[in-house]
Structures are given as structure tokens and as C-alpha cells.
Length: 640
Image (tube, rainbow, N blue to C red; front, side, top):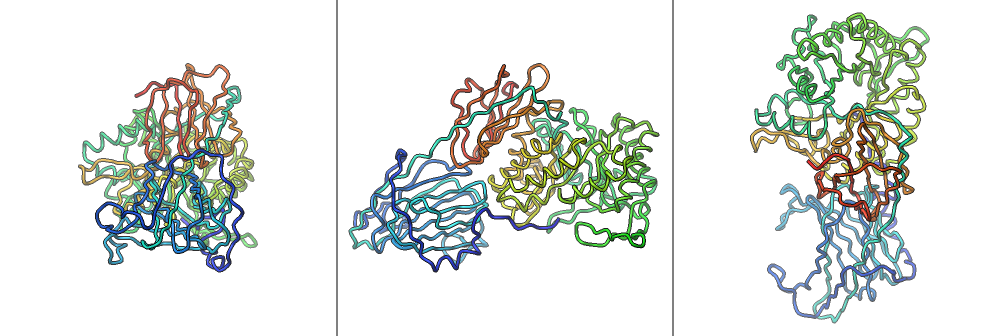
């Protein structure tokens, strides 16, 4: 996939050096009405701080609270920092941290990683600074505020005015204060940390406004990775698939190595390898036993070929006077599928799957991320429909050819609509959404692209067939990045009426953990007996949606009155219901539910940096608080 640089919501670090030369005048200080959470006091010439390794350091102040994924924290000083002194506000997380340093004339921001000996600079503790910016200021700085928000940024404010903004993708969990000054000075620095402001939001549900009917959740397994699990690992894998309701088996079937008689369609040794960095190959091949497990749990099989074998393609070039066709990598298309041969392969797979499992695929896709001339895509669609019907697979539906980006999918929809028969034969519009990575720092800018796709195909249902992060800049295993992917789930459900959400890989064999953490929900743990484990926070964020939104549920409208509180609601048979709420603000928010004849919610699940779909019994919906960056899932299902 094409790599994207994140779009920043404010100034990038690259833009800041010139600003560092210009002193900004901070506004006058006005004390906040907020209550103090914790006070602090530093005395430069007071008793030395106790503790080992710091024999003559002023004692630090530690704030015991666990930091949420997004937050606003404010310090108020009783007087400006004395000359010669500096206050360091240190924020730390499992992989990295940053420090904000305030002096009487400057404020500095330093981001650093410390999670590998490869980052060692020869000191006692491995650490490497990845960004450091400063800004001079004039005036009396009495308020120091740090805002870590859902725009993947950190903002530093003095007396309420933003002074520094930087890109930030890693998680923070704790913070502390340190004061530096000559021990011969009688500096006294006092102040307090303010309590965070609590917001209010009302969720108004309109149960009569039915939208899409859900098909489910899932993704693609790497069959070689699955084969490498131990027997216990395979049992655990299917327990996890059931627990997370990831039962849509999106096939990455045999492609270029497929034999003409289809005899090796599920031969592991012939899997077309995917080479990802220094990881072990993860290949294209079917596994009928795997599909049988998914079907037995109530799932469905979705089959879509990628590159075709050489015997299923023919040379192609545009007719005189017709435009060239370019693929996503800006290469000229010089080959095309033979629609008749292609359709026979797909029907052959359907017959084989039915013979092995008793069921045909619920859906077959036209082709995955391969560019065909528009007339070929149309012919593949109509030929496939004809051959499926002729073979008795009349209930197997067809989704359009998957494009890697929504921007390309819009073009494919418009091309396909020019052929009335092909558009009629298409049951689902689909897309991969790798272009979303260009909007990670401001996901709402992606809405216009989603709306354009929806408006182009209002008469077709949508399937989100492949979601993940593959940009190297996004391969940080942070909850904050996983939450951004969760925002895409919400947008797909609400703005595209998606009937299914599928992650790229369900299981991937990896050596490089950051890659596995962004591309796959699970990876094998060879240190505990070849069993599957969550690769990162991506599994819990997907689970916040997938675990209790069942096949056949209908989405209903929810209004929140707050753009930073995002909610989706679903209703099913027998008064079943599920409500998923995301808080992308930096404020804890008290939720009020306005739902006429509301269902009886029995279970609450919390998803955050600290909560892995943590289950609680609901005793009351009064004063239900959602933390910044938290996802709450309310369901009528009993605690399990």
C-alpha cells in the first residue's frame, strides 16, 4: 500500500524551529474556578530529597492517577518560576514519554523513547530523544497546561494560550514534577494540579429509525500462521473467535500458484507467500477445515481472489483513442482477466467448499486490489453471476472488486454503474480504507470521502472488507492509534451503513512486533506454546464493537449533541440491544440515556488503555461516566 504521512491538526514539529526564535507574549493569568486535585511545594535550599542515586536533588512530586488515553492537565503556580529555576513536568508511558520544561523565559517540549537498548546513548538508562522544540515567551507564566488529544498531538499552553504543538502517537500513563535550581538559592515554588473538568452528554436513541442489518465481523487468517499453532493454540484461537464474534472468514485464497484442475486449492505447501519485512511468509491458500470451524460457529465465508494464475489472464491494451488504465501503484495495466476462466475458478471453489463443509460462500468478491479495465470488471461480474446461478449457487451474493482506497472505490462504483447489468448483479459495494491513514490526526476530514462513496451507491449495502494500519509511521502499538481505528469503525457503521467490519488479518505470523501490532489482531506466542495472543490494543478496540453486535441486529439512530461523544446503537430480536459509546474528548463525560421504552441493559464493558473489554454488571445507568479515550459497550446480554 501507498504510505501516508499523517495530517496534523495544528503546527507540525517541522514548522516550529522558526517560531522558537520569536518570543510570544503570554496573556494575563486568571485563576481557574476548578478545584485543586493535588498541591505541590518545592524549596530549592531545603532538605535534600530522600532516595538512592539522587543524593542532593530536590524531592520530586508524584501524581498517582493513571492517565487516560486523552487528557487535559493543568498546573497553577502561586508565583512565576524564579530566575535560574526550571520546572519539569514528566509524562511517561510503557514505551516512551515526554517532558515539558518551564523556565522564566522559555517552554520546551522533549519527546523520547526508552524501550530498547538500541536507544542507549551510553548512559545508565537507554533513551533517545526523537523531537525537541522550545519557544521563548514574555510575561508571567502562572498556568501550565498540557493537552494530549485525539488529533494525535500534544499541546502546551501558558496562561491558556497554545505555545507548542507536536505530533504524538505513543501512550502515556503517569506523570510527575521535578524542580531544578541551585541548592544555594532560596527558591520556593508552590502550586497545585487542577481536577479535570467533567462534561455532560445526552444520548438520544431513535429506535424507530432502522438502518442496516448487520452481517458481522471478521477478517482473514494467515493459513500458514494458523497451521503453526499448537493443538491447544488452535482450540484457544476458536474460543477467541467465538468470544470476539469474529466469524466472517474472508478468504485469501490460492492465486498465482493455482493449478488448472484446482487440485491444490487448499495445499499449504503451494501457498503464495506474502513477504513482509523480516517476518516469515504468510501466504494465500484456503483451508476448508478452518472454514468449517467458522461456519459451525455461525459465521460465513467470503471468497475473493487476488492475483490470478497466468492461465486465467490475457494481454490487454486500451482501444485506439481510449485512455490508459493505471493501478494504485501508477503502473500501466497490460493484462486483464479472462472473465469466463475467472468465473469457473470461483464456481469451482464454491463446489469444493460445499463438498467439504456443506455450505457455499455467502459472498464472493470480484477481485482484491488488482486493477482491471472497467469493462473487464463489468464482464467478470455478469459472467460470475451467470455461472453461479447455473451451478445452483443462487443465494451466493457478489461484492464489487476491492480497491485499496475509498477514493479509488468511488471511481470503480461510477464505472460499474455505466453497465446496468453489472451494477444489478452487484450486491455489495466494498473498499479497503488505507487512505484513512492520511486522516489519522483528524478523522473527520475523511467524512467527505465516505459521503461521496455513499452518495454514489445509495441502493447498495456496504462491506468494510479490509481495515488496518500499514504505514510505518503508524506502527506504534499504542491504544491511542487503536482508538483512531475505532473511529473508522464508527464512521463506517454510521456514514456508510456498513453491514460488516473486517480487519485485514485475524492472525499473522510475525517476528517484528510493531508490524504485527498494526496489521493483525492476533499473533502466535511461541514463548507460551504456540498459542494466539492479542498483537496490540487493536483486538480490544475491535471487540468493543464486535463482541455484542450480533448477526441480524439492526442499527438505529443515536444523537449525542456532542461531536466528541460518538455512539452507535443496535437492536435485535427478543428486545436484545447493544450500545457502543466512544469518548474522543479530553474530558470525562457523564452520559444520560434518552431511549423511550429502553431495553434492560445488563452488562457494561469498558475498553481503554487499562481495560481489555472489562465486564461489569450494570446496576444503574444514572451518572455513567466515560473517561477520555474510553469505549463503553452496553448490552442486554448477561455477564459472561
